[in-house]
Picture (cartoon, rainbow, N blue to C red):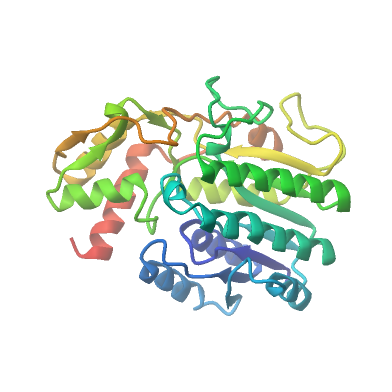
Length: 333
């Protein structure tokens, strides 16, 4: 049985990805620090469900702890590494930037050093659509320049892309960076919009709507994201581009790949879908744009389709209904 190391395994994406990998026959070594950025009880529940499988090896540790990842790589020699663990959140990065340096920069450095010593067959590292920053050309394509990040969170994630590229070049580490777009679904993060809107609407409380609702996002359902990540496992960066759209590095086994729905949804339509699923209308409090945010995201998914045939399947209204059904069940609403 091959071994996959998944960092951030008790997180929203990490839980679903680890579950899928075990279904595909992998042993999963799941590392998570259980940080208190949001309700740790959600992480404990996810980890508890993963631990019911004999294929799951839980490791409670911080990425940035010197030598911790090196020891983990030496003990388990993972053939596959999927690096999801990070300090997330655009707005929180304004209040607590140091945590982003420690988790995202130092933590990723520790991972790259361990991979240099014990090379896996393929490394997939999570980046973000926020890396596109001030770009206004839509849809976002991987070959576009991405030099003007709008938040410190995005800046640290773009920095990890550059760090990983240098290690791929220097040490021949096959590396795929995937940029994902506003992921939502059951067991999601409480700081995400779909979670906050649902909680407020069901509690009869007003919701905060930024930029007066004039925003759109490429909302990506969690099952679609996991499908895309798993499809990329076999798409190891090689010696030649697969198409003219390929972002394959000219000097390293390294590429950047968008994973999204490729269907931007206006924020007000997303809110309407939540209202419909909840069976009640929201009281909306309009606000200006928040610092560090962008008005729109939209993924060009041509490259991942060229590489794997992947296309997102779950429309927003269906995905929102699944989330609200989970929320009602989990919280007894």
